[in-house]
Every structure is written in C-alpha cells, then in structure tokens.
Image (cartoon, rainbow, N blue to C red; front, side, top):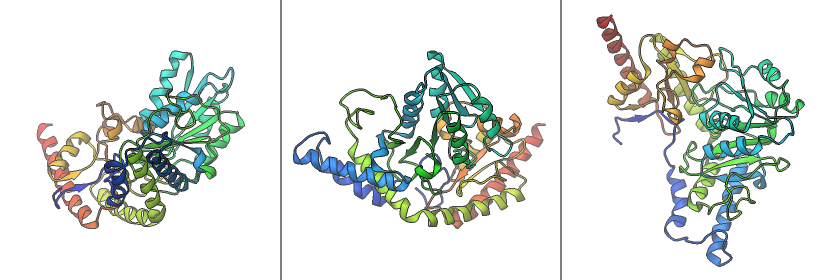
Length: 384
C-alpha cells in the first residue's frame, strides 16, 4: 500500500500482525498432523491448539475449558443463539437488543420458524440499551438474552454486568457479542457475569477464519455442527490449526499491549472529533462511554456512501456503517434505534483506528475530509 494511503476501517478487519504470521507459518508449511490423530504429528497439532486455547482464555478472563473454538465470530453467535435457545421449558422467547449485529439478529429471527417469539430491546438516544425495556421484555418467560458489549458502528459500550443480572433474576441465560470489544477495552468473562461470550480473531490483528464462544460449563447448549466430535462434541470439524494458533498469538499480544493501543487510538479519535466538530458534523453516541478507536459521524445533506467513495479516491479507507452488513442501502439500523432521522443516518461514516495508525495520517485525513465536504456541499447547493 502507498505511504499516502491510510486504513481507517479496523472495526471491519485488521492487518495481520507479522508476529502472528510468524507463529502460524510452521503450521502452514511443515505441520500436517490432524489434531485428533494419535501419532507425533497429531500430538504436535493438539499441543498447538491447547496453547492457543489457553491464550484466548487468558485474554478473555476465562478458563481454557470454557473456550469453544469456531471458524468466526458469526459462527459463534449463531452457535450461541441457536444452541442456547429453548433451554427453559415453556420459555419460547429470546430477547435481543435493537442494535445487535446481523450475526445475532438473523439467527434470532430464524427461530420464529420454530415458534419462538423475539423481543427487541429498545435503545436510547445515546446508544445505551434501556434496562426497563429489558425488564418489560422478560415479563414473558424467556430462555435467552443477547446484548453486545460494544457496538460495531457507534462504539458505545453497554453495562453488560447490570443487564445480565436483570436476566438472571428472570431465569434467562445471557450471551454477549464481544467481538468489537476484545483488544480495545478490558474484557473479563467472569466479571461480566454472562453465560456465553463471542470473540473473533481478525478484529485483533489475527487471521480471518478463527473465533470462539466462551461458554459457562454449567450451560446446556446444542451442537451447531455434528460430525467427528471435536470441541467436546459441540463443534465438529477438523480444526484450522494455523488460524487458531494465529488467534492465540494475537490474544497474547493484545494482553501485553492493550493499554498502549487504547491510549494511541483514543488520542487519534479525540483529535478527529475536534476536527469533525469544527466542520459541523454530528457524532453519534458521543455522550456515552465508547471504544477508544471508534467515531461514527455524519454531515447534513451528504450521503455517507458518496463521502466514503470520495475519501477512497483520496487514499483513505473508511466505512459507511458496518461493513459486516453491507448488503443493504437502508439507513443504519443502529442509528434508527437511537432515534436519528433517516436523512442524517444515510450520511453516516465510521472511522475506526488501529494499532498502526498515526497522527500524520489523521492530519492528512482531516484536510482531505474538509475538502470533500466543501466540494459535496457546493454540488448539493448547485443541484438545489
């Protein structure tokens, strides 16, 4: 990539860390054992998986026995929703927040085919899930609640421990999607007080193709994939050893560098927000606790997709909302849930910084952004 290009879409995916690649290479070039095999090659693969499982657990405040390895965060979310629903007799309702990722909402709504009800928990104007809305939803017997720890678009962080306690009082299991939180803020499975938690490798400078569901061992869950009995029979399929090793290595690195990463990205985000305010932007969720790397904003009468493409031509990669759900031209469902007007929501642009971003990149970005905003406003005025 040219030195004049800058990647500001780290909530979508991150650059593979060279140290992670180094850990993976032996398993891509030399190690050909199946981890279920009893010979020395299989045992070597098994040891590598065990070490990676310990590294993932350590980064998440969990025990290795609670880590169920998957191929992605999406798989882990589907596993939780489809596998944990129906754990209470006569409790055929699950509750999800209005700002969840499609990897949670779509499997939840798919359960309607099995006669489940889906309660949608409201969010306030600040992007915070409404505890009263959760309490009202749980007046009907519910088997599962799923609320994300940090939103992938706004970066707003939820008080998961308090929300999980509400669910527990009503006897419902609680799952949280922590994919965006891991590597940006401290994540501790035990302290959150949840029954299940999703994490993913490629959001923390690890490889794509690896994720995990952290699961309370006391929870009954139905297998998502049946087959050879891997992952205690809960997730069958020959393990992708290289990707899992990379996931573990990435977890070990974020454990060491979390504070420095957060400090660097928050400095960039705060400087960006000052510039955005000076240009008249609306910043969504700015009054709430947010991930240190994320800013979600819009300019009146400027389409987000148009601005994203204009900035791309200037060498800056940003996103219009969530790249994980880019199959729709509708305004962000997260912003709709927050009460943002559709016209303003269509202008939404997300900047998400990573460990390698610099102040120089940001300075150049602000100059380019101001120029493009002025140009697009002039075009809008001429067409009016």
